[in-house]
Image (tube, rainbow, N blue to C red; front, side, top):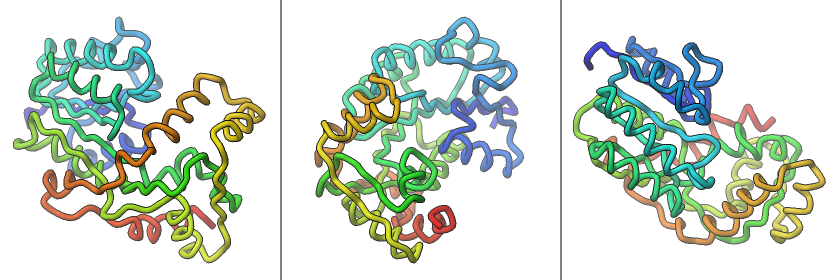
Length: 271
């Protein structure tokens, strides 16, 4: 490392927060990129990016709300171009496995940061207990428009380990790591494992996309968010990502954490 800062965008989020803590534990200079930081970082205010990128050597990009939203690939490219001009040596992009728009962002970023590293992630295991499903899991019933499609849920701890390696070590430049868990489970199977570990009933109920959208509207979700969720559950989760991949093994030289490891460590959050 050069003594310059490592900038973690989304540094208060699920992946970013873990990355920040790991870097801090190693005594490395870390800058959290968020609207509440000083200087603040806001994806909608490119005029304010330059101060955040000043004296930065490595950059972790977790785009909010998601790389699949319109305009995201172009915005990521613009940031990458500014980062390259500012002398940032290492750029790590969190991407989505099986998302065409996310892969467009990867390609546009590569045009201005050819040595960028991509962590192309499957569905987060932690979504069950830290993300959008946490409240329903705690209440004992998860309702989604997803059937018997298996998904190799990735433990975010693995993503954080790989991101830290790519931000601080040589040997990851230009790599695209497709990261998944060790095995694939349906949502019903995943919920069943959580229920068994928690020692209480937790049901998984499959509904149609139309039923899911109607319920989301009743809960006041905006239409653009509903459309994105339906895209995620009916397009990305159509089986294209069913098979586990070797990204964690290639990037870290070890096997990924199993879903059972995540469940064991997160059981407290389901009680």
